[in-house]
Image (cartoon, rainbow, N blue to C red):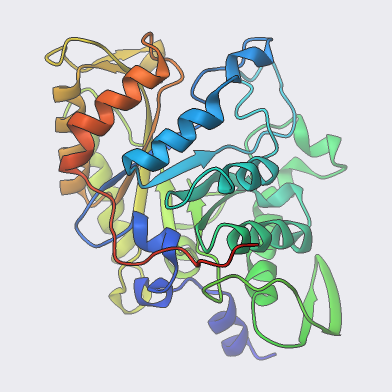
Length: 345
């Protein structure tokens, strides 16, 4: 395979390339922002019962019309690092949620490509995409918890290189027909990868830098998920706008690719409560008017999807979701026009 051929087959795709992908279409459109929810809805604190009933609430998230639900990928809980993350395996849990939902996009935020072999990761991803009718949007990352790499027998310092190799390998696996792949992560010739995704490919959005340059992300990512900077003043969205512009200026051909960001919120009863940073800026306490102002600032900055985590909210999750659905979603609706594949597996 020539260098040109390899680049064409492993680089990122434009919005038009995913025009028939239901999950991608539900979440993204130029100059528009949609809203998704990060799971879990409550943080694990040593007792799994805190997650009881979460799937029922995800069904309500789907019914309310949120654009996406996001699951994290944390193989090992390191108490010295912080939270336990999603706890469940992301793809096993997405399969469970796919059966409980009909329209909401299913997103990983993010699958740690550097820890897993690309064949196994692609197999799980393509399976979820088929079972959900084409709703998987695959956030990918190089990993940020050092304890996990030696547990897998891997070098933490080599994660950036392994990430780039893994992304290229996964893209090649999605091609039609019998394949010939030669990669530092493995090689084979004459076999076919199954199942294929519903739309022929799964969008892979890169999280943070994942050890790559901005130019690499502009060329190889189908979208970009970054932290938002500060969220209690307009200064953060302004800095975010500069980052997004710099990235989009490097995208080959000027094609549209979506940007995503996220924030953990404590949505209080008082709609006029000012945006107030908590826990060193890790959590934003706010009323719904302040949240809507932030979302408007993000949209003006070029953000196309906001993933909100409510696990630190003091109010019950059902109550927070109801307020978001009633008061916020009408201003930032999910995109319609393309229903998931109706195949009843």
